[in-house]
Length: 112
Length: 109
Image (tube, rainbow over all chains, first blue to last red; front, side, top):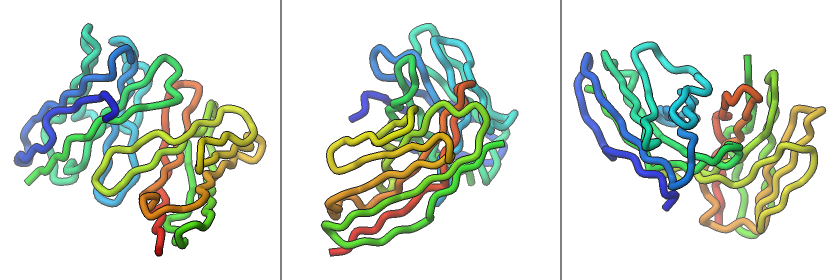
């Protein structure tokens, strides 16, 4: 158990819909990262927040947005969903340096 | 842009040694990490190199050569439970991260 929690574990929705994925980092970690992993693919870095502020942006679509709240939990919002958005979405947290990231169990999203 | 290359698959027998190479091209290189991921599971951190040289953690070691933009992960005394995907990941000085496509390691009895 990494100490990072993600909800929900599974999500099934339809094209065009909007969903919110939630992540709670390990106690004391200020950084939260979001990743997308499609079937048999590597991890695509989406976005990094540090203590409530966006620190780095990767290949995140404009239909996707994220935020980190004062209690340090983070949400990833996916809108106008397409079939290709079906994937595993991981959240990770780290201390200030970011060298070691602790991953949550992931949310498996299926868009039908 | 950034790119990382690592072999897609490696197969070895129990007790053997496996080396997974990772070459990268990026600006603002800060460090190289390695992660292990079992089927359907979350990636778990294995090691991190920011400076040239070898880092050893139990049966796993990681090496970095910044001048060659190259690193490797060495798995020794392979066990069946080491069958998994292994990813190298580059962190840049602007905090952006890139992961390689992963190397699937299959350990045979």
